[in-house]
Image 1 (cartoon, helix red, strand yellow):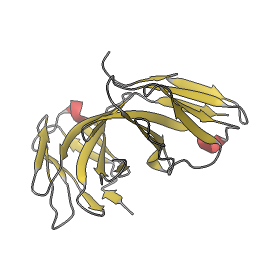
Image 2 (image 1 turned 45 degrees about the vertical axis):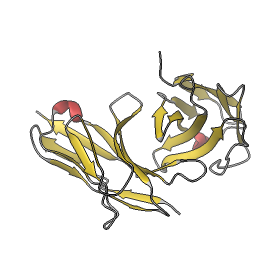
Image 3 (image 1 turned 90 degrees about the vertical axis):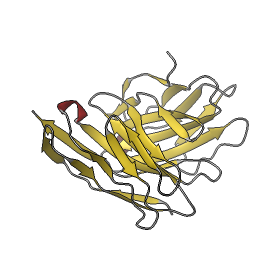
Length: 111
Length: 113
């Protein structure tokens, strides 16, 4: 497929565990974003990667959140020591021109 | 900072009714404006966009006009269908160094037959 893909689609974890969420952007898109969609906060920007530049981490809510992008393509969002308030849908998007194209999201539930 | 305010709903309409979902924004500079739609069980999809003042974005019978003087980008459709039932998000991108999107809180639209 030509779209953005994310895995897993659903993740249930226990409070205190670490989780990794994966994003495969559209081929050729150099810009990649992570957003979080939660009931209380709506859609929030988390982090932005552009090529080989330093990422814009201004939206990360705490130092438990980190992300990397290897080889300018696949990205992984890691949440350490998960808390119940981390439960949300995590969305990845890649950008072509001015338009961002979103993946289906990973629904994270922290018990 | 940038912000988007949209009618929160929920909005319930009968098929063939006229739809308006209001959206206003606050931004530095001249943002690009977007409407995204999220159908039940699916991801966010771009519905339409406008990149400068007085531009009209349109798609699938939906329209929105970029109004700089009122800082608005209201979504309209003349005759809604049951299949339009979804959550609609207004968003802006100020460009700059990262083109990140700032979203409104979303409006749930339910269209009844």
